Image (tube, rainbow, N blue to C red; front, side):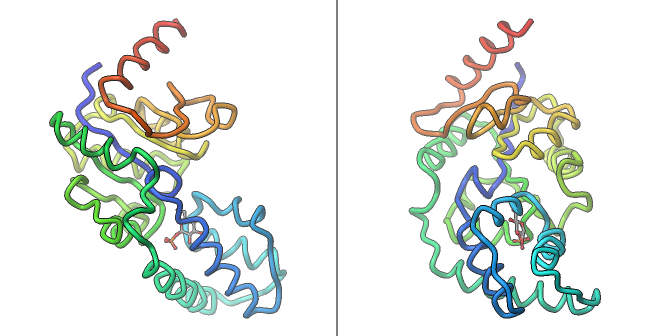
Length: 224
Ligand code: G1P
């Protein structure tokens, strides 16, 4: 199959940062005099910081100038960074660390492509820097997923064609971004949500790259 690198989304694939974002966005809403549910917050997954900001303000029917939005987004981010101080390396999702170690042992590159501008800080907190060659975050690329920009830039920084990079995504918009860019895709999560991926896995437990590629060959041979 010629795979030379694995590119992983961060939030929901490597670690669950959603609960920390929820605390920080909710605190912002409360400061502005309204509240929202955890289910509502789920819809922010995969959105950029400012897209999330627009959505939260819409829920509270709060009007702000652009300068105010930037100010409050910054305030929210500081609350989020304070939450990150509680994050422990043990919060890496099950099987991810051994999968990254397996990639390293087999000479395969690993990179992270995330819409979060805090992706580098999260990788540092989780002590995953030794296993990840490159972190492409929301401050490096311009167009958010489902635009393929983040994956294309990651592949280009790795000096590899899209076809040589296997993308791991938990969000339908991320799978779409990777597919549009010509990348083979692994959906991480529920198959019904990720039916456009080449293969779906429930998680990384007991997973090796060799085993995964075998499953992919099988699934591709079934679909022709
Ligand atoms: C941003 C958003 C957050 C969203 C996350 C997705 O993170 O703030 O709502 O869920 O991306 O990865 P930030 O760049 O603020 O870390």
